[in-house]
Length: 115
Length: 116
Image 1 (cartoon, rainbow over the protein chains, first blue to last red):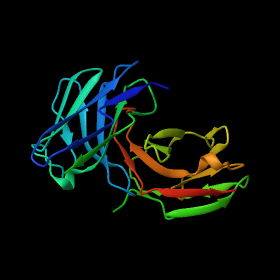
Image 2: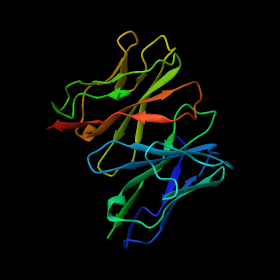
Image 3: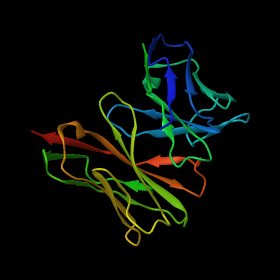
């Protein structure tokens, strides 16, 4: 299957700072990328869907001004958690999809801890 | 209302036995896809199997098969001859619509423990 990478794999930051997470599709062009958040022992909750070159579509209850998503190219999407707080601590997973493949390809995830 | 329901929060199964993980779904869209993913403790999401709503036959991938009962809106995952390495979290998921790049919604998951 196709490969999606995420960077960093884990990050610890102080409350009030911003953190950027990168999601890259390494061997395919991801026309659409998805960002999920997973709290411990819970399921993946879709945060937003981003299409290359256009604004992201956020799920209900997700603050778009807090979770900034940029999908600047067909191989890169970024999620910036602005003014992070301890309750933002979570596992963030991205996935990429293209119109030609039946499955989404998931990145390995980024564990964010906000102190 | 939940679109994907997994009623088994946890299961314990003896090694080499077959195991069925339940999943029911709810949609009014005639075009949809159903997925099963495995998530080990490392956190990565591993794609296991896919079933399209128009597929006539149940999907199979090695030791994994999907028992698709469309009228009952159920898509149970069957793992034959379970192995210790099958211990993980398993998520059923659904994509509504025809586009391969439509969003996928996940169920709450079932934690499977394989006993030696």
